[in-house]
Length: 115
Image 1: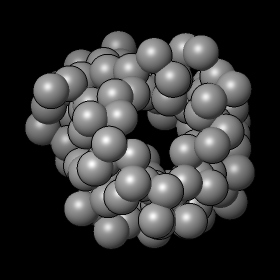
Image 2: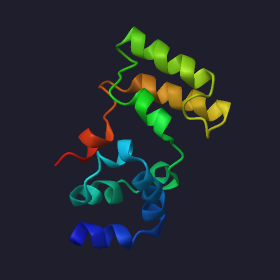
Image 3: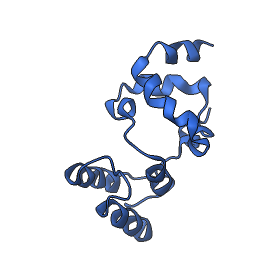
Image 4: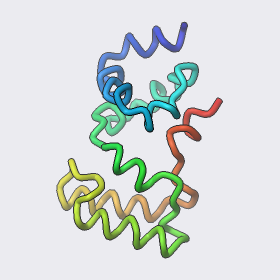
């Protein structure tokens, strides 16, 4: 209950997460008991929720830094705007630079929210 109350008191985060309720593939990884993880991030990217389900599916559980296959897969889709499509080309290039620096597999929502 405490986690749900915290979430409801944060209108920006609540608004960003509301669309996920309509997407079973994303919703399945979330756990209300771990809402504090999102609240503690204080991250505008999470609050703005500009990332669509196709992007999540394309990036999660990949490691473009160490896997050539993952790198080519993400890079080609990013350059064509198939993923991170709500961002302009310059922002997508910045996102790509950051993705390449990640030294582990990009977590899925399920692994992020895992207790």
